[in-house]
Length: 180
Image 1 (tube, rainbow, N blue to C red):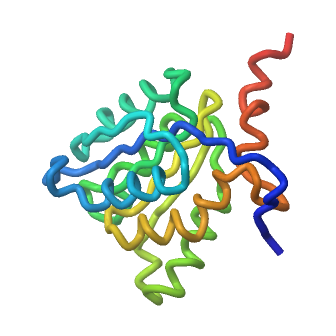
Image 2 (image 1 turned 90 degrees about the vertical axis):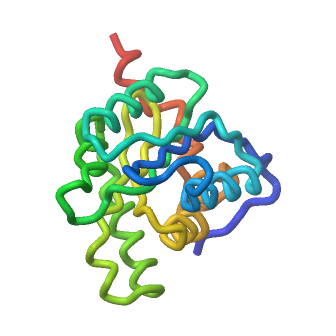
């Protein structure tokens, strides 16, 4: 059973939020706002926040920029994970992944099934790692962002979470680059 080990110190991580949308701006980005509020409430650091259009190259370019930035540990994107022709966020993420976190999408589907039933099959939430940075692509609804944070990311981005979490392995994500 998972738990928080209160004897360990909380370690804040630096998280960038990317909203992928042709129609949103900062004034009406409810999904981005949901993520920012939860990130800050948890004690993490909002490293950056951007909105880009549903263009695969633009999404991948922004991801690469943050992957190269040593002040960003995690990128969470919202939007563009559906099935329509304009939904290209998952493809952009996979363009930059070195490794995919296959179980992230599976666990997100399980969480979503409890909330929205079989409509969960329309989501293509994904997670991966590139350049020592965690990358997560979430659907564009505030509810999906809330569920992903509250049920998965809040715990996996907390160093105190047991039996394991993403934060404790951060120093080893790019160890293959240090081997000679």
